[in-house]
Length: 281
Image (cartoon, rainbow, N blue to C red):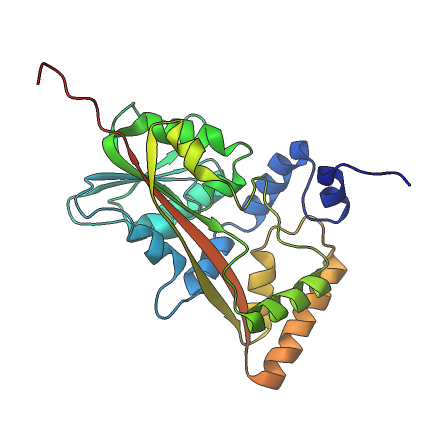
C-alpha cells in the first residue's frame, strides 16, 4: 500500500490547497466577494458581542495610533476608532480596500500594502491588530516580523483567527453535519493552531493573553445560508455540494425556526519589549 505524506493526504481530502495555489484562490475570493467574511463575523455573536468587538477591546484606550493589518472591508478597523486616535487600515486586496474606503469614516487612513512590507516607518505605532492575517498569510512569521518592526517599544500586538475549539457538543454535531454536506472543511493557508509563544518571543513580543471564545452565526433563511457558505474558504468543495449544503440549512431552519453554526475564535495579545534603560543605574 502506498503511503502519502500528511500534507498530501490533507490536500486529497479537500482540506487545503497546494501552497502555490492559495494566492490565486484568495485573490479571486476577495475580488468576487469583498466584505463577505466580515458580514458573517459581524453577525456572529457570543451574548451581545461579535469577534471584532472582542479583538478591539484588547487594545489599550491609551494607544494613540493603531494599525489593522489585512483589514479587509474595515469592520475591525472601524471598531478601533476612538477620539484623538489615529487608525490605519492596511489591505492588499484592491476590492476589499475599495469597500473599506467607501464605508469610511474619513478619520481612518486606508493604505494598500502587503503583510510582509507594511508602508509604515519602524517604531511608529502603538498597536498592531489583525483579525485574519495570521491564517491567511502564507508565512505568519513575515507578518510578525513587520508587526514587531513598526511597533514602538511597549506597544501591543493582537491577533484573532478561527480555531477548532471551544465548541458545545450540540454545535459540534451541527457543524459536522454541515461539513459532511458541503464536502470540505473550511481551509486557510496558515495553520489554525499555531504555537505562538516562541514565534512572538523571537521577535521581542511577550505573550500576555491566549484566550478562546465560541461565537454563533444564526441561519434563518436562504439569504443567511448563502451568506455563510459564500464567506467560507472551501477550496475542496464543488458548486453542487455547496448548493446541497445550502438547501439542507434552509430545510432545517424552516423546520426548527433557525440553525446555529459555531464560529470558534482565538485571541492572542503580546507586548513589545521596552527599550533597555540607558545610562548607569
